[in-house]
Length: 209
Image 1 (cartoon, rainbow, N blue to C red):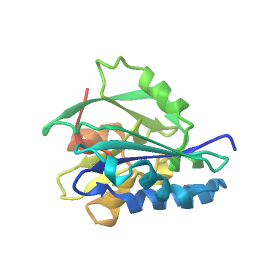
Image 2: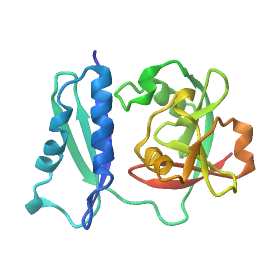
Image 3: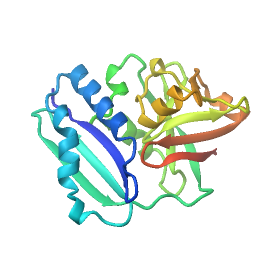
C-alpha cells in the first residue's frame, strides 16, 4: 500500500512529549489495520531525534511519519502556541467525505479531500474548514476534530461512523467523560459554542461565518 502514517505531537520543555502514549497507541493500531511494519520503533525514533543535550527551551512541533517500507522520519520545528482567547474563522466546504471510507479513521498521507476543502477558501477568509459526509452530517476539520458546547456541560463530537479521524485529543476528551459522540449537522452549531482542536494545539474556539 502506497501510504504512510503521520503523528503530529507537541514537545514541551517541562513535560516532554504531550500525550505520547496516546499517539504511539494510535500509530500502532493504524499500522496493524493497514499492514504497515515498524510502529514499534516510533518511540525510540522520537527520542533519538531529540537528544537531551540538544533540547531547546521552547515548545516544538514534532512530525513523525511511518512509511510503508518501515522507515520512520521525524522532523522538529519551533512551535508557537495560540494566544489566549484566539477565535478561528470557520467555513464549511462543498467537498464531501465518505462515511464508508475506513481510511478516514487513520491519520495518513492521503490528504486530497482535505486539501480540496482547504482550497475552496482563501486563507484570509478561513482558519479552518469543516467537511460534511454524503448525508450532510458534520465530520471534522481539515486538521482538527469538531466539538459543540451545547451548554449541557458535555461536549458533543461527531461519531467515527460519520467518517472522520480518531483524533488523539478527541479520544482523551471522550475517555474522560468531557465529550460524547453525537451526530451533528450544520444547523446544530447554532445551538451553542463551536470548538475545533487537535493534540498539538488543544481546543480552539470557532466562529462559523
